Length: 288
Image (cartoon, rainbow, N blue to C red; front, side, top):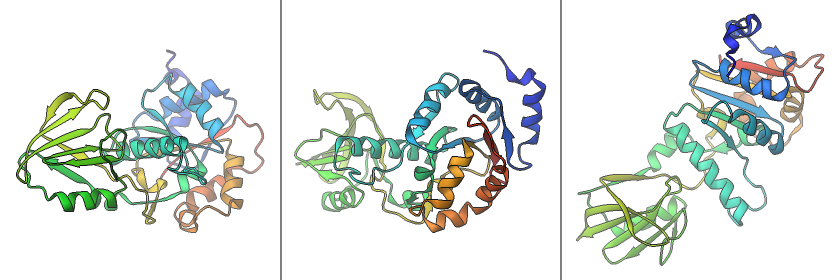
């Protein structure tokens, strides 16, 4: 793969990061993703913000050729949310990425302005809601079931999908939203004797673990936006920025609190958007 670090223009852009909004022109889409990938070297995270989902998916498809840590963070479905298959899939996708950011993974997140601005629980609130269960812990079944329901989990006769749990005698099954397989807890009285991951279809054990964590499934908080999930050392990329800025100005659904928190970022985008020509232009900006 060609290393852009050998190009003078690339090194000029890299050196200018942190000085303001940088306008980059003349990149066809595949070149844009290549440049973003290498510009992001040394940053704790990268965020590519575009104007709609189809464009975000196009960017993700191209970007994955350079970086397996590229992910798409979708907006909530305003109509169905978790009421249909698509709504459930989007919710699980959002929770998976939220957990990875919570765990401080170095990701490149491709998203839309709608998703970027949504009101969410803060990481501090999420930390308070985490449930960690370890071998040897004492468990109150009634309190655990109540807590799981509060976190967006459903009590079923048998676990079959993410976000479900079941209580059967001295056995508790929980399928966390952010795990690939459910966990089975064997109790001796009220003490956790054994924890195993198991297969949903066969119900057979996969492996024994010492502990696991249940990540909250609801998105009920309003003290943060997706913008707040990123560290200070984040590189922001605005694709087709004139369209993104128009959304920022005229979309009445965007929370006012989000606009206040990001006003500096977007005021710089406003200045940079003056006399903006081609669609293939994009801007890069650090958080500071």
